[in-house]
Image (cartoon, rainbow, N blue to C red; front, side, top):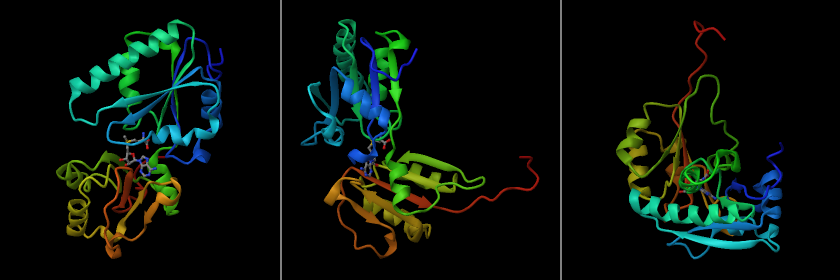
Length: 249
Ligand SMILES: C[S@@+](CC[C@H](N)C(=O)[O-])C[C@H]1O[C@@H](n2cnc3c(N)ncnc32)[C@H](O)[C@@H]1O
């Protein structure tokens, strides 16, 4: 069975990349074009859905539903909101519609799709639930600087920058650290990196692939700091871990 064509009664969590319509996979584009219904998440704090903007060239007669969600660190509220949405999605699937939820980047990396999938798993058979990968913000950020994320035995650690104590711990646990949500406390984060002499090895991209809004900073130590938005990702190159000769290939 080819799960890549939209099937009636199926749900697809589709990653749409960091926001540039050209950074969508061909398969994501096809699933979006063929969908009966598209759910686009939008944080209550945003004026628009970035995921929806990214797929604007693909919109035709699909029904589009913007699903607002609260940006709160409250597990029960979050799950309650996504549980309600899951009921709507599974009801539409039962009526034979093919439903797509678009999500920025990849649907399995810090993404609201994961809450929806979790709730849907209780309401729909697994064979009707699909995930379509997207280019994640960290891949797009790395590509802006032509610098390898990992080589040989380097460890890559992906995390949110919201807890600076956890960030400090992570500096000793990997060779490359990717920090999502890097602008939450940028002065604090930069001070921490400076303390470890890592500012010259940290790069960031804000609103990558989003036209004139995009900001790239390759050299944080000489950057005249400015406030950046939520869509900011930082990569810190901490060191290199070369092949050890005593380990078999
Ligand atoms: C809720 S997470 C979404 C991550 C997404 N699922 C992915 O795989 O990239 C939001 C975080 O993703 C990163 N992000 C998403 N889009 C971005 C963009 N266009 N430019 C820079 N960072 C972005 C930022 O770190 C932001 O705080």
